[in-house]
Image (cartoon, helix red, strand yellow):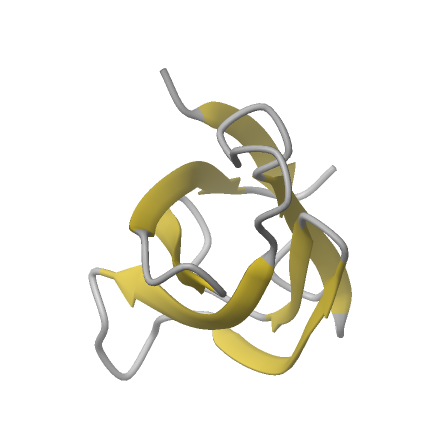
Length: 95
């Protein structure tokens, strides 16, 4: 089940993170991450500045259409070549 977060459409560069530590096997680590947002259209939030620290991947999110719901997905590849993806849900509204 994906975590659900309230997101303000006026927010700028809010960090959203996903921790893959429970999934990673001993001795493996995150080599890279690609973030996607669905639906992806002209009103979708803007993602920027992806980072990784250990097993935690983070991206910054700005904007979004008031009343919309988005799925933000992190697709990782590990040093051992494994792949996984996890998502969080953003519900856009004034907080």
